Amino acid sequence: MASTTEVVREQEHERQREEFIYTYQEEPHRSRRKEIIKAHPEVTKLTGHEPLTKYVVYGVVALQFTVAILLRNSTLSDWKFWLAAYVIGATCDSNVFLAIHEFSHNLGFRKPVHNKLFSIFTNLPIGIPYSAGFGPYHLLHHKYMGDGTYDTDIPTNLEAMVLSSVAGKAFFATFQIFFYALRPVCLVNVDFTWVHFLNIVVQVAVDIVLIKSFGWMPFYYLLASAFLAGSLHPIAGHFIAEHYVFDPPSKYDPKGTPFPETYSYYGPLNIFVYNAGYHNEHHDFPYIPWTRLKKVREIAHEFYEPLPYHTSWVKVIWDFVFDKNVTLWCRVKRAEPVKLK
Image (cartoon, helix red, strand yellow):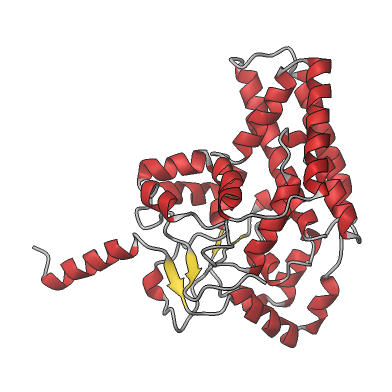
C-alpha cells in the first residue's frame, strides 16, 4: 500500500503534467550567445548568407515536380503513388520547409527582399502559399521564445488539455502540419503585405498551369507530400524534438538551473534539412547559415556538450506518443509575459 507521501508526490506529479512548465529565467539563447562570443569571438565570423542553398533548392524543386508529372497517370488508390509521396515527396518537402526557414533569417542572399522572393519559388512544391506567412511568425518565435502570446510554436491550453493522451498525441503527431499552419494565424495577427499577395498569386498560377497541363494527380501528389512531411515521417520528428521537454522537470529549479527549452539532434537526417537538428546552435546564432552550424558546435563545444540532445527523430515521435510523462504540456513558458516591441 502506497504511503501518504507517495500519494501526495504522485498527485503533484499528475498536476504538473497538466500545466506548462513555467520559468523565471531569461530566454537561454540570448545569455549563452553572449557567453560564447566572449569566450570565442571568432564565432561571429561565421555569420552571413550561404550561396549554396539556392542551388540545393533548384535541385529539390526540379525533382519534386518531375516526380509529380511522372505520376500524372496514377490514382489515389495506387500504392506506388503513396510510396513516392512518403519516401521522395515528404523528404523533398521537408527540405523545402527548412529552406524557407533559412530564407526567413535572410541566410540565402545578401538582401532580405531576395530571400523573400526566392522563398516564393521554394514554396512551389508545397502546393499551398506558405512562405510569406511563415517568416513573421517564426521570427516572433525567436524573439519571444516561451511567451504564451507571441510564441505560436507553443500549443494552446485547449490543444494540451484535449490531446495529451496517447490517442491525442498520436493524432497530433499525425496531423501536426495543420496545427503548425493554423495555430499562428488564429493567435497573432501580422500585416498582410505585397509579399503575401505575390506568394498567393504565384502559387495559384503555377498550380493552375500544372493541373491544366498534366491533370489533377500531380497536384494531389504535391499536397500529399506536404501533408506527409508534417506527419508520421522520420524527418517530421524535428517539429517535436526542437522544444518539447523530454527530461523530468523535477531535475531543474525554475529560479536556478534553466530548463532545457531547446534540444538539438545530431544524426544523419540533418543532411536532408539544412542541419535543422542543430537547433540550440541555430537559436544561439540565428544569423549563421546551415553549412556553418557544425562549426559553431566545434568552436564552443564546452557550451553544447552538457546540453541534452536527441539522436533519433523516429524515437522522438515514439516517445512523445507513448511516454506518459511527455505530453503537449511539456513546453516551457516564461512566467513573466513580454511586451511586443
